Structures are given as C-alpha cells and as structure tokens.
Image 1 (cartoon, rainbow, N blue to C red):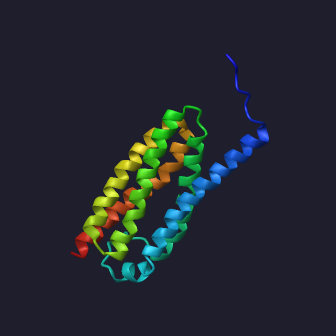
Image 2: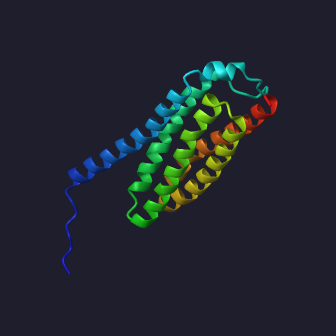
Image 3: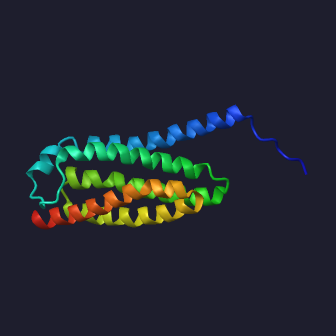
Amino acid sequence: MAVTPAPPVHRRRARSLGALLLFMAVSYGVAALGALASADAGAVYGALERPAWAPPAWLFGPVWTVLYATIGIAAWLVWRHPDRARVRTALVWWSVQLALNLAWTPLFFGARQYGLALLDIVLLLAALCVTVVQFRRASPRAALLLVPYLLWVAYAAALNASIWQLNA
C-alpha cells in the first residue's frame, strides 16, 4: 500500500494560516452583518427600559470584538484536528450557533421583536452548549475559548428577557 507523503511544512503552515484567516473572516463577517442590521442600536438600547444590571451601550462593541476573535480561533483549532468526521460535526454546530447569533441583532434592534429575539438567543445558547461539547472532543483549548462567549450569551439572554418584560 502506497503512503502519500505529507505536504511540505511551508504548505501546511500556509494552509493553516489560510484556514485561520477564513474562520476569522466568517466570525467578523457575522459581526459586520449584525452591525448593518443595528445601525441605530445605540438609540434603540438607550430608549429601552433596562434593569439596573444592564451594561452601558459602549461596552458591547469591545466585548463582541474580543468574542468574535475567540470564536474564529476556536473553530480553527478544531479544524486542525485529524478526525475529519469529528471536525465536520463540530463545525456544523459552530455554523448553526453563528447563524443564530446573526439572526438575533435584526430581531432585537431592527424588528424590535424582543420575544422572538429571546427565543433566538435561547436557541443560540443551546446550540452553543452543543458546540462547546463538540469542540471539547476535538480541542479542549477551543472549548475553553468559547466559555466567555457562552457566559456572555447567557447574560445577554437574561438581559433580553428582562428588557422584554420591562418593555411589554
């Protein structure tokens, strides 16, 4: 049986760097699309009745900037795992949670459908939990990178629920 030689190290590194850039582009692409859907998010958020524990509007940008980086890097770490079936399953869940993440902003800020946004973010939280479990099987470091995102989404879900209740 003939063994196919591994590609040269420089090709593997270039491919890996390309994959990292792709995962980062997808993550920040979701962020950019969300920003387009929430051009007046500051005004909408400022006009809402919010609980005392709600963060100031300026905090969301820096937090999400860091979280989208960890989301992209985590996917790249999983992509590097040799078990392609495990990688495929994990990245399908990664894609599902990103799609739900993308849907939340237009629901909440664009359509001002706080109840539908809450449903979306609860589904996002569930998909994110599955993603963390799947990522842990391929890369424990990748799973750990998603923990701050998971905690922020849980906090955001509680905030969404409170805002829906206060503004009904």
